[in-house]
Image 1 (cartoon, rainbow, N blue to C red):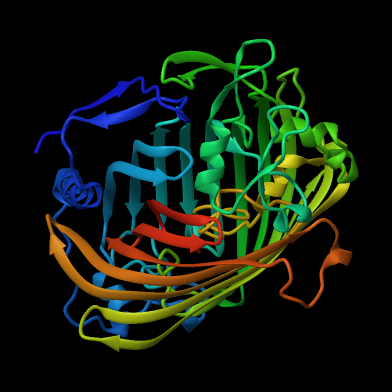
Image 2 (tube, rainbow, N blue to C red):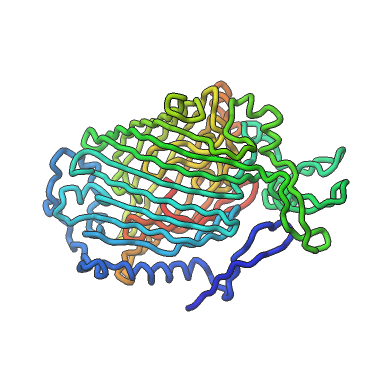
Length: 524
């Protein structure tokens, strides 16, 4: 199979960015699986000078040496997981295809270098890997690019320590700004008036709303105008961090300390000119009017909530963050757990003596649990998984972009809220944002069938889920009530590749429409 991809300019009503078009019409998921399998076979252990490992047919506990210090039995991998776990050093990697409803299709590559050592290693039965390096580069239709490098080393130096380091660089012209504050939970989608005295246009579905914003019209001065980027802004970010953990209580208790520098800057699209299709289908240059970001900076919303971090000077804002956390963790295989719990309290501090531009505190508490009540055959299993998280930010000088995530110090990182691929999946990314946020995710995950293909291990499964959440401006607004909570059900497919890499496809429906995502790893 051959496929050519070219970047072309696409001029249509409501589209101001470029699109990739394919010369051949293909079914992306089917071809992704085949392309993944083929390219991953190129990274077989033989190319690394090793013999392809075979899992033992009957894994026995006494075949694995004990670690040099006590690790609780709850942290031990399941016997089936151990039977499938590969030895040695190997690479998994593939060209990634991704889709989200804001940025469209994306193409890139992600590669993982795993160092598992052998079954004689005293930590083989207690960790998903000894070292992992993850490199990721991605470009979307809307020209967003995302470069990430991660390093993770459980049981560093054969001791009760863990080290993690991350670098992340992002540029996104369609970063979302739907408004900040609890008020937006109760308001309909309202398009800004085009002229004084015009009746407001309200919408139930986000698709209809965004199509209305993208319409081009002639202003009183005879120029063409649009509101297509009303809920968007340009984001540029450079993040660097390093963290260490100390394991206690047999590996169940983790004490975390880390330092992070995050450089950010934002630009409004107001006043920019975009080449779009005009009212009669002709190509015109339309001027973007004021965005919601501009409106809320001007109407006092930011002043009321002590927000800053944006100005038209386009300078870089510096977040200098000292973070600490306490985690209680009894999960087995972190990328795809079958049992255990994960509890966390996280605290981030920004202060002048740390050298940044902000003064704020950010806390998060979360509880995650996994239970597998049913297994069948060699591969089959049903796992129930749940997450409950709460985050809060306060201080006299808050970086507004810090409201956009619940800042976990766990391996998966912060959770972008509320809406999008890792929170309430039926709503647009960052649809609801405020200083206090709560999120609940419930999932039923299955493994249905496993096979070995092109020297790689694959397990196909499904997921059914329900996501919910809410936001508040102040803690005093929180009440024991379902008022102001949003929710969205959904389902999807999962492919576990060599245990530690999870490919996921999700589709979710909310009161504002349906969204679908293709991405890597479980959301928790």
